[in-house]
Image (cartoon, rainbow, N blue to C red; front, side, top):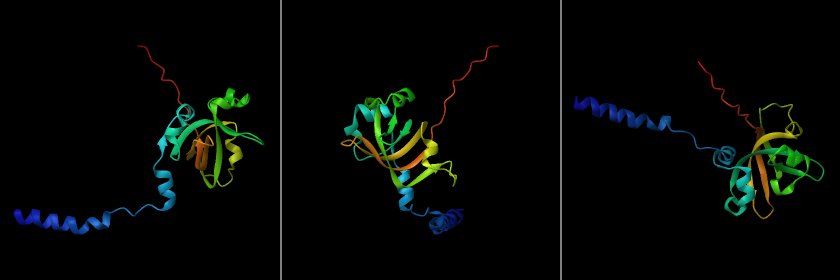
Length: 145
């Protein structure tokens, strides 16, 4: 019985490197770790997120002079800057869903989720590397018996 445990332990240890994960590439590292935060937290305490990669939801409005992530649609319609942060897209933006026919224009004037590096001095989310439509949350309806 002792020989069996010794044999299985040695076998397990010799096969362990086969199951080790490959190290992530640079693209995976950029998307892997980000501070999930709300837009309100970025606006209220920008210094605590300075230089960090953040993931945040908001209402995207891109235009000639306006490229911001707003708290609400009304804030975007009235260009209410106190409830917004500027956005700057990186060279390669991963769009979800991944459709080759998609462009960033399809996310304009919609609620989105973005991942990028926050700069507190510019009050901007820079190098946005990923964008997707924000998930919708539906209220749970209670059923009565």
